[in-house]
Image 1 (cartoon, rainbow, N blue to C red):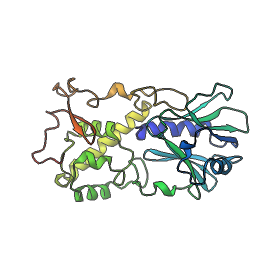
Image 2 (tube, one colour):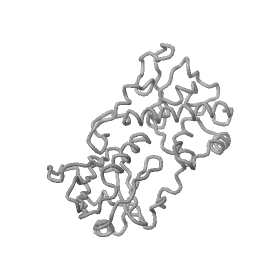
Image 3 (cartoon, rainbow, N blue to C red):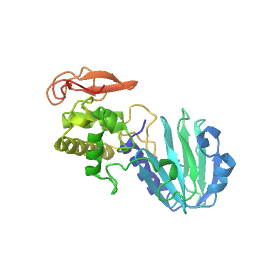
Image 4 (tube, one colour):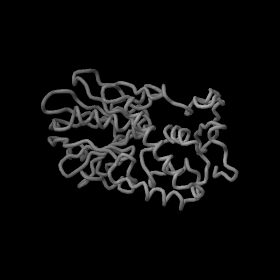
Length: 283
């Protein structure tokens, strides 16, 4: 699932390539891609044709294009791609929604092999679409409040990695960057949040910000061909991963083999020496 750096990379590409361009035509090629548009594909197309995408914005793993007072909300899901290119290029069988523009320049195609992603028009959602209003600010937003996050973390009775993945606490962090930040902060993923000190929380959030910033500079993390930016290019932060996906490889800090544990039907990676297991962990 794309996390904050991947979605922000796509947002920047949209800002550069489609913002300010009037839409000529919108074609929904697969109804599942607009399944959240209760009025159907026709209403989605009509709501956007002839209008201009004014800005590209993001909260956590969601992004949206403001269209007047409304929003074109997008969630990439597992394999969604927003690709800009020559409008005369062949149309892939995985293209779900096709946007063309009045200037006859590069088009925009929402391509989604697994069809887990979706788009929808949200009325009066330009500032913050209602379907994602419950999602907490991410560490790069002006509205992000580190002190409030620390209080809420300490009030929870859960493992710290579960807390990092809780989008109602802080958004944009997924499995990859949670493991990397916890490794940098020398905290085990099952550490009970109620036992964490304020300095430990501050150290962890500094690690989160550093990891997300470095990943963004690298264009995100691409483990397969399904995550690419708007120009079809892969990110390369996977070359910098310390523990995620590195089972049995030496920890870059101490040389101890990296451990993989089962976690929420996924995996958690950590260094047994740098991140000792808590006595009463919340697994």
